[in-house]
Amino acid sequence: MRRFEGKTALVTGAASGIGRAVAEHLAQQGARLLKVDLAPCAGIVGDVCDPDFWAQLDLQGLDLAVINAGVAGAGTIQELEFSQWRRILSVSLDGAMLSLQAAMRAIKGRGASIVCTASAAGLKPEIGVSAYGCSKAALIHLVKVAAKEGARDGIRVNAIAPAGVKTPVWDDVP
Image 1 (spheres, rainbow, N blue to C red):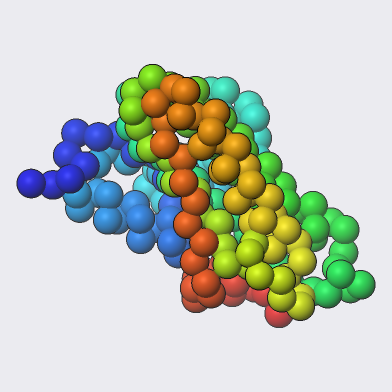
Image 2 (cartoon, rainbow, N blue to C red):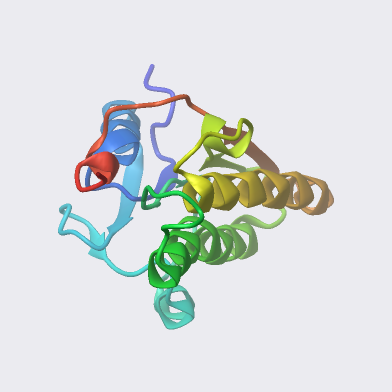
């Protein structure tokens, strides 16, 4: 039996990397997918950082959400441009919060699950990834709060924190 047969799953950052692999796995397991990405991915093209996008997206019947969209960047604190800092935090933290908020509202009281992709960089400081690491550390804390808040409504919220994974998010990072 396919584990997710008849379930509806949201996957953000679904066009490549971890998000793409998760979406492919869920599809193989019979899930109906709502794939969100800025890049065309045979799904919904949208900006996870845009509150209006989430307000207009129909998540009725959602059973599972994988909050995965993120961007990377590198540079020491002294060298990092503030615009790069804001871009990384906007997508990797603000976008995750908006995605999480929309998913929690959609699955309230349904005993559903949400998984957020954090990173080992959010747990262990490394030179040159301050913005990325800070966004993932904040995401880990956000997930802890969401887990406590969601428990009242039958929502399970967890984070995974993979170590370095060679995905396209790092392709343009020097």
